[in-house]
Length: 183
Image (cartoon, rainbow, N blue to C red; front, side, top):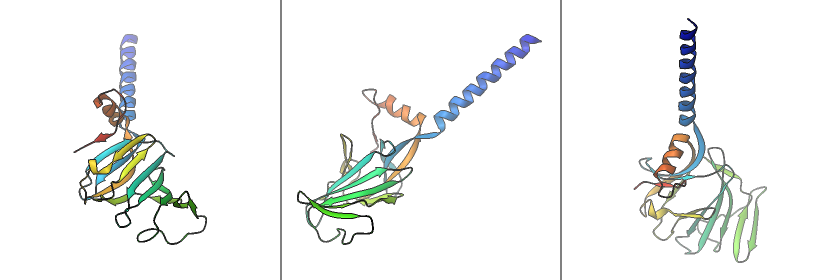
């Protein structure tokens, strides 16, 4: 009788352990920045990020042909626009400053800072001239490599599961966590 109870307890413990492992690998825990096709929603690029990490979107303004740099931080399920830097003031550039924001000139750049504008997503039309590039730390991601010029993409912050994160590491050539690009 005691042996049967012992076997049942072990089976129950193993079942609970397996359920806990399955739950942990299925829970969305890790933040990622995704670039998805705006028409279909298909993910084109998934980049592991950290809460509070800075993301920079650099591009060439299509009319002025001058550089623009937008700085975002990774929030909980959102991107937060923090600042914009641009060299030419005119069409399509901000024309006013709201309370708490600053507008300065630094080394030939107009700098609009302290924007603190939360965005649930960021929609972009990949430009022919723009050369939209995401910069996250030392990493750079030219968006024209994952979406054709003229196409619409949507950037969002999501959470991925441990299983997805492990799959990315296992699938990489060097065994390190790398972005996943789908083409």
